[in-house]
Length: 384
Image (cartoon, rainbow, N blue to C red; front, side):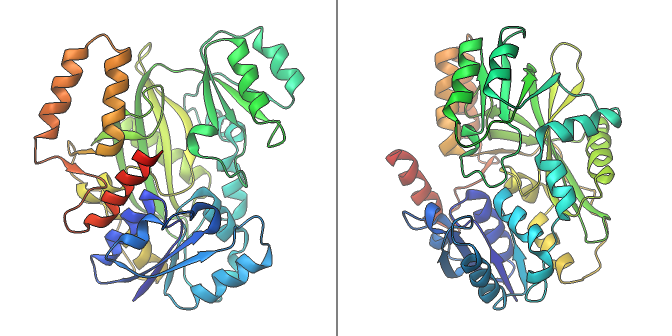
């Protein structure tokens, strides 16, 4: 029993490796050279039996494909973690499926989901509330629009497939026209197509699901962000499992309408103005709060592994709501930002201290059972 987990320097890949490794499945970890200036995070895990560093996916051409095929033949299931790897496996699925099992969306569905403008348009046709969204295709158009819209706005790269930037480098909250123009200028030569979205003030929520190769739902999960880093909009640093019928309805309607296969996370914000969920975007991959789903009773990596092997599984709907989880190395800077910018400083500090000493709240990265990756992640963050 072997699983190949990509993106070994990613903390989400670590969650996948731990989930499967703790069940006795041998883990083979893979990473690209550009993300391996230091030893990849998963290589420190006790569950990683073998690690490979490959040439970069978009610069090595056929070399990367051949390397993946060679490694894939050593395992039973291939689990792509990042958007780029889902893109790659989906694009080359016919070729790779001769060597290893996996479940990814067909390429048409992947392209639809990864296009920020198209997915919003599709959601509108389904009656799912969305922010006001404008597509811009040139620097000149950005300048013209920047003088006519209300601020703040969120500006995002329309389609980040093949663009090797960190998540926080793919979008920006602009408070005025100059910030909007500066962000577009900073990506000159990388892309010229952006979406400008109305900034929704509200709490972030996520709907996550897994569909098998026949587009049949196998599991879903919901969470809300209690804190995030950066506080202006970023990954969860402190989060909680929730159950909300409206959130589930919107998420299922959207992914089912796209004939989805594999995993995905649909991001919403609950607007403070009208108390409605507004679709922000869809991430066609495993998500940052995956450890919370596992802790709450939905082990998505294990479901993925078994389903990819052809094992028949019942739909997993039941999970525990109200489970909280922190990611300490993200939560500390998140609290510092809130203390510096917020008005309820004492409340924020007291809340974190209470949570810190509440031993029922687990950490999504630190684990006494597999301690090395958590320590190395801290060292890497301090180095930055």
